[in-house]
Image (cartoon, rainbow, N blue to C red; front, side, top):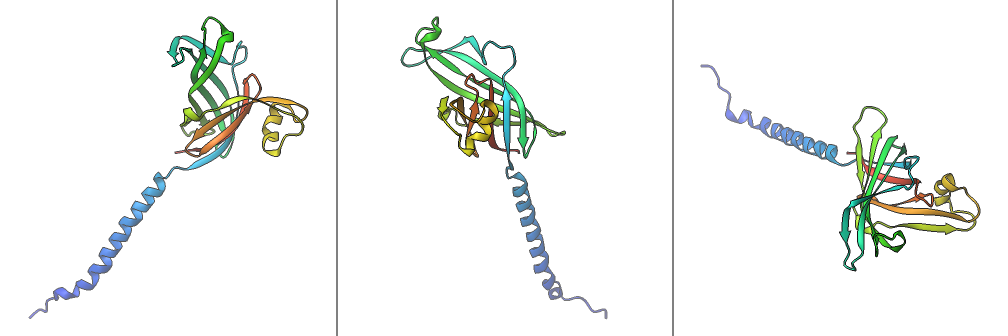
Amino acid sequence: MTPTRKPWTLRPLRLPLIASLAALCLFSVLAASAAAAPRTATDWFVGHTPAGQASPIQIDPTDVTFRADAAVGIGYAYRATGEAAGQVPGSFTYEEHGYLYFANPSDPTSMVGSKFTSGVFTLQPVGNSGPIKIADTSPETYRSGIQTLIGKLNPQTQRVVGQLLGTSGALTFGYFTFTNAEGTFIGYATPDFTRFAIQITFQTT
């Protein structure tokens, strides 16, 4: 009579096998989650508007809106190109849109404010990887203006503003903000905003 295997002889193998499969599934889920997690990088973006333009912004008279105080908003576009240096070096373009408000649209001196609606950096990294879009995700908190400093700049701004305007005496420069999921960053520009520099941390995936 040929002996037969008893069912209980398989039982010790089942638990390790199930545990191994469960561990493998868990590892796969964790690996997928890690792969899906956004990676970040930090770059300096140094750009300039196209040469030869009478103004760094272009007005679109067909794009008109109205404010509650009856001021008339006329659409504008600001475009620039430049080089990014840092963890993801490459070339970039920047495009900004918004409105300039006037009490009397036929009188440029009657300007009563502006509104930023969008700003997007498109970074083309060195190599064969595709472009990275870096958008301002909080247009309502955007700020810009002109500031004058007298004397030596603090280390934070000296490196940036110094490259654009110098590092001593009374320096007048433009500033602007850029906000994304990684925070709010301050950029610096020449007073006419034809050249600028800003350091941004952004998601690469």
